[in-house]
Length: 245
Image 1: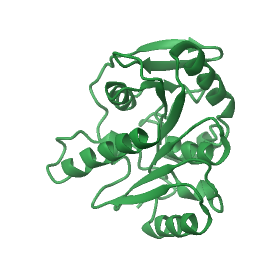
Image 2: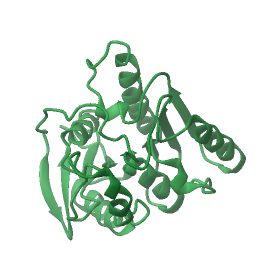
Image 3: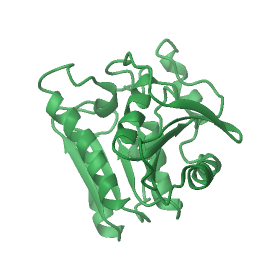
Image 4: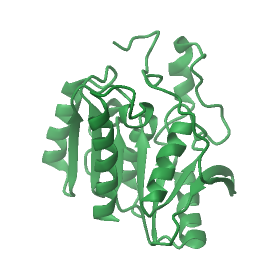
């Protein structure tokens, strides 16, 4: 169970040994990792990283996966040069660290990224996906940003957005059944509140036996029992984007 000494279980799983097929670029005041599909489709996805930042190989792996499915995929540095969290850091300092990196304070960076995607990549429809910290950021964007068309929030911390359910765009929420930081009662309440308040298409899905970070923090071969759910989560993410972008 997550506690004061270990308030986030984001270190569950593996740091992939993966270099990436895209490239690092500079867009105005932020750096970003971008990977493009072989042919332009006019569709793009902004990938929002977890606490381990924009250079985490796992997140680049997912970014490249989106590009392989026909999207210009871009993962900006939403910490804007501030250091990402390191597994070796003292977890007792985590809450103070997180206060300086607010998942609701990314609008300027998103606007810069949307401008780049439109002007430099020919994007006509753009969505957003995010993991953990980034999942909470997607929730924020789906409430606020009129220019995005769809979102997928993967194990975004629900408590950051209590009483925020009037989504502007179709949003898919992915959770693991065994996620210590996001209790199932919070997920159930989210689903209930969305049904009562949300007028756009949405879905909340719980994946049996899965822990925090399972879609991007576990290799497919980490455990034969996990493999179907890891693959299902990734497929669901792609299918949602395909449906609305």
